[in-house]
Image 1: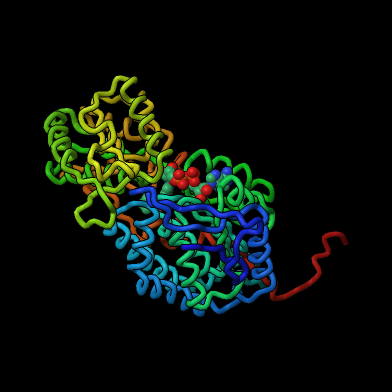
Image 2 (image 1 turned 90 degrees about the horizontal axis):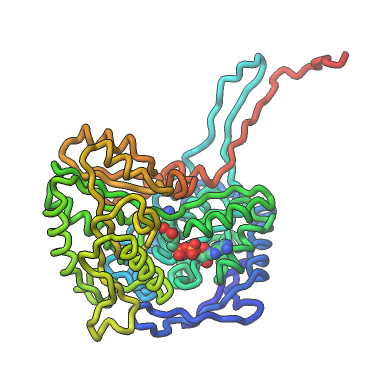
Length: 489
Ligand SMILES: NC(=O)c1ccc[n+]([C@@H]2O[C@H](COP(=O)([O-])OP(=O)(O)OC[C@H]3O[C@@H](n4cnc5c(N)ncnc54)[C@H](O)[C@@H]3O)[C@@H](O)[C@H]2O)c1
Ligand SMILES: C[N+](C)(C)CC=O
């Protein structure tokens, strides 16, 4: 499979003719050869987006028409669901069941923002000044640079593409260089849906090359980034060239608080789901378990028993529950954190190495791993591992649980399990995080905003606010009885 970039309505190879091989993390087979863009390709895409926004008609197309095109994209994604899911599993190693669920979520995101496209007609406000009128209107920001990670390639792209298109912006998307397949496919669907030439552009390539150009270029009006915290800091600095707007969706080290009065079996099952779903390669993974001291031993015993039964394998095998990590480099990072945990004195109770099955040896597999005896001071408790590694801490009181839960630089998501709903709501109120789940873990949907407190980033995706993030707010004031003011008479 040979795939190109989409710039100004044309499928093009990179100016320097460079290419990159894309591999399947399950067996390291080459699944595609794609164009490898450079800064020059990014500049061409930005010029196209700039010219289209400034001279084209997309931003002035009736919002209802834009909404219909965005809705059509959602319909085409559903029609192509199986092919998109296949590509996503090939690219990431996640199970085909997860990929299918992602595609349902993604089509819903396009449907949701299609519906919002023409709903904000602005508002009239009561001017305090006689003989005047005031109205507040929202307008598209302009050229949007969009940079996405490898763990949910099309889902994280959809969270940016759909609102940007629905609100009348033009855009340049740079997906992760290691998982571009579904982003390329969705741009084919953009063409079919009638997205005008130059409105949406796709550049493939390395972050420090193509991504950096998007962040620095003074013809870009907003940079929306989803990825790691260090990259986010780099992008923040780069964006200062023209004081462009910045939206950052960064990492997390997400606490999962389990009180003794929780439904035990539900809490055990959800704790597994929280940290081992998609091999822990989830920004909101519940990788920090905080369990009330009185149930700790029983809870850990139940967790370990279930963890040993998790079936690793090929994402296309329906019996597989967890796939490989994305790359050898990422597995090495996870292995490094396991070493750190051991050196810090955490107790390894399950996992902590690579599986031995012959059929898994060509993939970047790592066993689901649990450490007990952890404390807030440990690096393995403070830092995002982004793999199938759970740390377990204990607490005696609600106050201690909240203090420990809030005690990292992150603030993306967290959960609390208890049958005492007043206690749950009180904990939810005190957690410094963008999402708090009560007696559940992981649900997210188009209607609810997503984003972080503290160093998990700023800005929100999804929800009405996710649409507004792609607009500027303008106050239009009219004097209905113009006369000289004679200030300098
Ligand atoms: N908050 C969220 O919603 C969310 C969702 C998914 C993933 N994430 C986070 O993403 C991270 C994992 O993804 P990753 O490994 O792809 O992150 P990453 O930061 O390594 O890369 C993310 C994207 O940034 C690009 N990039 C890299 N260096 C760049 C630079 N100097 N300038 C511009 N772009 C650059 C990459 O090419 C990629 O497209 C984790 O920290 C995870 O928590 C957050
Ligand atoms: C899809 N999401 C944002 C919940 C998790 C991303 O890693």
